[in-house]
Image (cartoon, rainbow, N blue to C red; front, side, top):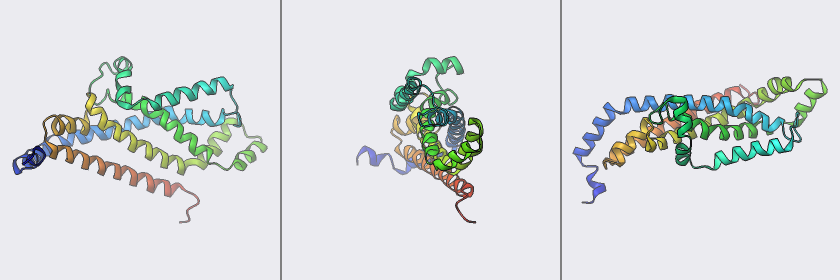
Length: 236
């Protein structure tokens, strides 16, 4: 019998069930609140940045200098291109400056936000660029200011698309939280690494994966239903 098969003997399954009952409730809670908080802060930073990418474009409603827009785009692309595990190490000084430590669930929020807000900015940019230009031109012809166009036209008209993209963001961040477990983060990722991988308790590893998949389904279902409710094009 190979090592993998030995990991699923009745004794190992009983151990996995014990870990599930004792460790998973806290791990699940840590994963959920870290994911939600990281998504919130990523939206706080990424939403205005995404708006800036659209409005500050040379064809936008408030064009900004091309060199400035190029620098912003380069920074966003750079942060998006760095693998998350490497990014965790890169932002350790920032994490320590803000949280006081680079280990634990709370500390993992900082690299999660740094990794996610450029992604959110691109998602917001994509949503806003889907708008019908005629709507914006109509608002401009009526004498609306830049802020009025943003907050009364662009954002309200983009709400369903934004909710869909924010749902994509939160499920992506949820995946990042699992990876952060390999670098001292908490939650289900830590359980999967410390118990499932390091101690060869593959049943624990699979349980963690199943719970993560279920969490993704929950977030995705909530986001899809909310986007459908907010979509004015869908007749009720």
